[in-house]
Structures are given as C-alpha cells and as structure tokens.
Length: 484
Image 1 (cartoon, rainbow, N blue to C red):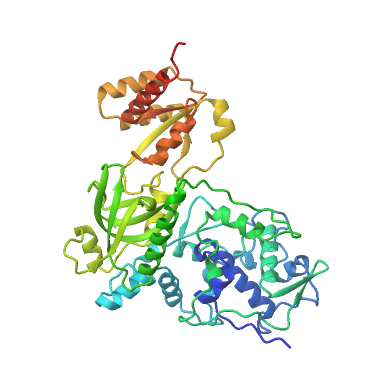
Image 2 (image 1 turned 180 degrees about the vertical axis):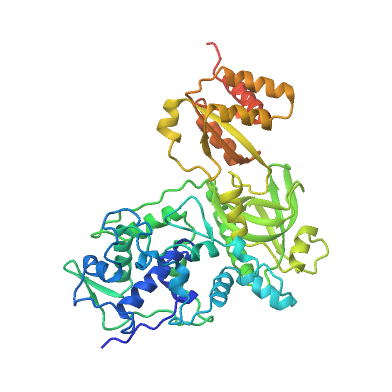
C-alpha cells in the first residue's frame, strides 16, 4: 500500500519537479505538486479516482460542473472552481502549514545564494537578498512576453491553463515515475520515486539544470524532443561558433579557471589581460566575473569593473581574446571604485541582474551601453515575410505612420536634423511598416542585424545612426562599381 503524499512544496522539491530552470517552470512545478497532493494526499483532499483513469475522469472531480470544456484558458466562471484559486491560495494553507514569508525567502535565497554568503561574512543584513523580489523575474507560460515578480506570480490562477497544458502535466508525472501510463490510462504507483527531502542542505542534481541556459520557448521544445523517439533523434541544435580551433585549448582553460573561481566564497576579483580590438592592443582590466554568455557566434565573460577603454563599469569580454587571468583578493588596492562599493554593500553583481538588463531594458547584448530610441521602416512585403509576428525584443513594437512622425519630432533635438527626417518621412508611404525599439547604441549585434536587413530596412531615427549606415552603404556600393 502506497504511503500518503505529505511533501510540502519546498524549493528543493519544486526544483526537482521543474526538471530545469525553476524560474522558467515555477508555475508548472507548483501545479505538479498540487496534482500529487490531490492524487496521493490524505482522505480530505484525495480525489476518488478509479483504478486506471484518464484526464476525462480527473476533470469533473477536480473542477466544478461549470468549468468550460473547450481548449481556451478558462475565465473566472465560478469562485468555488479550482481554476479560480491563486498560487497563494494553494500554497499557504493550514494544511500545508507554510508561512508565506519563509517560502518567499527560500525562493529568493535559491537565486541569491552568493549574496547570502557575503552577508554572513560581512555581517550586513540589508542585502540584495532582501531586495531580490524586485529583481527575480519569473517566466509565465501564459504571458511569455512579460516576466513577473514573485508577488505577481503568487496572485496568478494556478489552473487557469489549457487542457493541453494539463495533459502535458500528466505526461511529466508519468515520466518522473509518479504515474504509470498503459493503454491510454494512468495508474497510481505503489512506490513513490526518489526525490529531494525538504532540507536546505539538499543540492539539486546536475540534470536539474540541463535546460537552464536556454530561451524559455526553446527549452520547452528541447524538453519535449531532446530524447530519441522510437530510437531516432529528431531534435538538433546547430549554432555558429567562430572561435578558432587553435584557441580551443586556451578557451577551455579559461572556462575551467572561471569555474573554480566561482566555487569560492566569496568569489574573488580577477585581473584580465585582454587583447582589445577597440583599444588596439593588450590592456589589463580588474573585474568581478559574473557569468558566461554565448552570443553572436562566440562566448563572452560578462564582468563588472574596468572596461578596456575605461568608459564603463561593465564589459563583455570575448573569452578567446583573454590572454591571462590572475585571481586577486578584495584587499587589492586597485579595485575599481564602483566594484569596491558593491562589495562593501554585499551586493556583488549576479547573472539575474544581467539577464534582466538584456531581456527588458533595451535591445542588444552589450547591456551597459546607452539606451536610445530607434525607428525603423520596412516595405509591407518584407515586413509580412520576415518581421511581422516575430519576437525581437520587449521594446520592439510596430507603430503607425503618425506615431513615427511624432517620435521624430519629440526625440530629435537638432532642428536641422528634425527637418531632414520629417522630409524623408513625408516621402515614405503610410502603408509601409514602422517599428520602434529601445536599443543599445553602438552594440555590434544590433549593427549586424541592421546590415542583414539592408536594403529592405531603413533607419529613420536616431539621425546619427542613420547617417552612419548611409556612409557604410555608400562605401559598400563602391565595391560593386568597377568597370571592366
């Protein structure tokens, strides 16, 4: 006889149920816990399911009679229906005995572990940990464009999802060993699978994080298709990687060295000797290594401290251009002031801080560059084929002709430049497609994207970017004007 399911929704259990990034799959992990609670819980909550049941058997036992049967996300049709209950109402009950503050703190601690260690070391209680809720953004599968704070997640209706999503929940429970699927029926198991105990000492397995690095939508695809189907691999991920084979060993060495540095508490600052294309030679930079990103066909170290040209407190260092890494101590006399202040306040930079800046603030990987407004124009045919209904960035949005005109007037300070741009716009069709976006000025990836769209994309704003692209186009044209 199987025991009752009495596990509380601890961070460790939810991480295990998430099978990847908890931030991407938090809602699903909590929902899976509710499934288990109602399938294997005590008699006050356990559903009276037959031996061998389907979604159709489960649905009327869990939801109210008025719960809609279609494929759409249910609206609030009945205050007593399970689909009306929020995440908060499922988690924080007398039955679970979970204190909201303690649970929220545990989630924050899960993503601010390094800051917590620094606080203990320096005795500073007013840490980034206390403010992490504003920085910790959670993925909402029903609203993929807008990540939410933990408080916002708690107020979402947990079971306000489609039938297909609930069917996928059941499939995951079967994959995890909580159910047995046979002849289109689910059967309860007599022995629960091994899982994390409710202990802060429990460390999730490496496999818990295998999909943590992926874009949320891509992670969902990979989760569904990464395993072989009938012995055949159907999912492949092909990436451009421009690092020279001659530098492979060097890059691997830096990866391993950084990995060892990140195991230390606290993580030390480092001195990088960097072959900078911008400066035109080797330059030493004292930085705090935050994380590694694959972006624009190669791998970068995101670091806080000296930039090669000393114009920013942050920089993305191409790892294949790093010549040397020297670990330092926090007593080193030449640590940049901004970095020193963050260390003293026990608020050293985190990967989440960078992810938020990249995802939401402005379009471009070089998140430390100045954000500016851009207006683009595409002809309608090109827009329909390649731009419309694509997700470029949170701030990349289509606007009408009049909005483009108003933004040019508002954002262009120089009267002569404003006059030129308005004259240009007057000669363009209102039927063309116009877009606005906040972008990182001089970000190399953005410049490459704009070049790839030429000649079907026209930059209308800002004026200096438009002029720069016009100059590039004129120089490029000269390459094709030879007469033989």
